[in-house]
Picture 1 (spheres, one colour):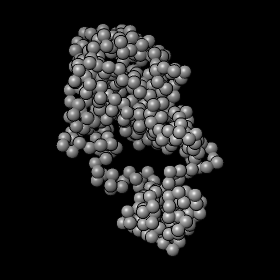
Picture 2 (cartoon, rainbow, N blue to C red):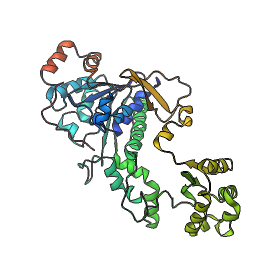
Picture 3 (tube, rainbow, N blue to C red):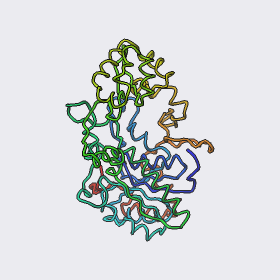
Picture 4 (cartoon, rainbow, N blue to C red):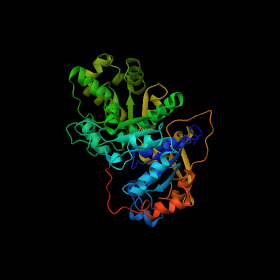
Amino acid sequence: MWNVLNGVRILDLSRVFAGPAATQVLGDLGADVVKVEEPGKGDEARGFGVTKEMVESGITVSPSFVALNRNKRSVAINLASEAGQRAIRSMVRECDVVVNNFRPGTMEKYGLGYEDLRAERADIVYCQFSAYGNVGPLANFGANDVALQAHSGLMSITGEADRSPVRCGTSVIDLHASLALVIAIMAALMHRERTGEGQMVESSLLRSSAHLMNYFYGEYWVTGAIRKPMGTANHLSVPNQVFPTADGSVVIIAPGDDMWRRCATALDAQALDRPEWRGMLDRQRHRADLIQAMTAVTLRLGSAELIDRLAPAKVNVARVNNLGQAADHPQLAAIGAITSFEMDGREVKAVASPFDLCGIPPAPNRPPPLLAAHTDEVLRELGIGDSDIEMLRAQGAFSQPRTTTSGDSR
């Protein structure tokens, strides 16, 4: 946690992955992130993937929630109640940024849309995040990461040739979108600093997925090419894929002609350094033969020996690690990509924000909050007196709604 955004308060009405991942980065940068959750239930992600075995071992909150919600405080407010809506409008007066990922129109239905909250604070930065955007034929559709992997065409190029479509193993569109949100919010705050003006910031899973697919779309628009799954291979160059070894698998990428010659020499020059494979286009033309010859070489060698041969030759190579090998690899800790905090009496490790600020020493992390743990504390800080808090409580602002009326963009 750095103090870059010290003094900036974020009212975070988002949940699940993309929004919380974004506000966590802002929290890591020192912003005061107030997470607004549904009373009695909280962010749906609190329960994602929690098993009986986890509960028996004392883990009652989803590891995915823990991974995306440090450096925040939790308040529980019933947005479907008039009292809850009044509470939000009062809180906004002392906040700089509002983030939500409800379906388009939901915040307006609650009287909490941009124009509503702008009336409470003229320079508010209001971030609206949705599945498909606020306009267009799919604007009112809900979706999650895997739905956008399908819609965007990403799923159609993932997996093995002539097999059923496959999703990426992680929520790649959600997490990519979270960084887009951070960039947009930081830009809006910079604009406000220079001009005194707030604004509405909009993004979506669709825009994130399109950005991930940009060079595939670009190629299609220029040539009409519709790419298909190639397993771990890549249509841009050869070799550029996973190869089996005597004890596992490695990825070998040698796209340029010079790197290919170094690769061939380091592995088996007699078998691989052939005239018909020395040019980039030639290697693409003879892809199947080249991959077969390389596979025959890599199968004779262990993964470590392959890396020892190729890395000094400045050929791109990496072992295919499992999750444990990757998470515990010393390189990850060496670059400061692991953070930690105390939670439930034990130290919890987590992935840090994907950057470092070398001129600003980090501050201790705040653990992910218990549901509603900071409701009264935050309301008092935002100028709402105890008598008003009790009145809001009596009017149902902090009690569980009878039915869930919010639209989830997921």
